[in-house]
Image (cartoon, rainbow, N blue to C red):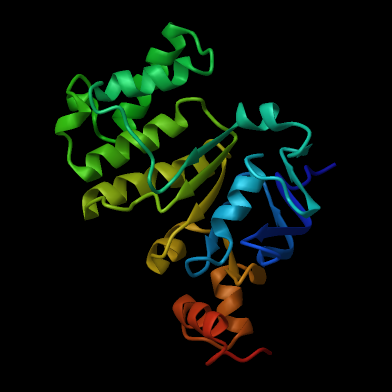
Length: 255
């Protein structure tokens, strides 16, 4: 019997109240399934609902209606279970600048109750993977923005999560550093079968990394599928044409 989806939503809706009797629909009737080991690109303009969806999947927000499941667990009932097995790297993640690269990883992992010996083994491996082993004992305060981002990626992975949510993971990272981060994500998916949900505005990154994508616009999931499938479906030359056409309502045509 095959395993069901790692992430599943059913008619997921989130409405925020703004001021007196004014409502904003951040998500509207979203139905989505993501399988184990997939790299799934979550695309959409600012304000489309991407962050709201991720926060619901992590149990940080309660949906107005509908259901969401992560690792087979109801996100409203099993928040602690999910948070022990899922990691989030937000775009504006904070970092402990007066700790070294290694200390950042070990401190964060310690919050999850991982034993010191195991933590150090994981830190060794991750620092090597993100190409910071030679700077592991340097204070992060002196790191470039790209180097800090690599520490944050490694820190998110120290708990060995089954599901990883990454919001613009290569923001502020130079070309070589971005390549390192992308290779880490490929390895996590192909070799370790971890599920990755990635938000990015870099459609070249999407084409390189993502098995499938979902496009959100004004809270609605307007398309899902492999990039090549969407290009064929909407008779588009590339994913950028699909994305801009769906978001603006111009320039794409269904089969």
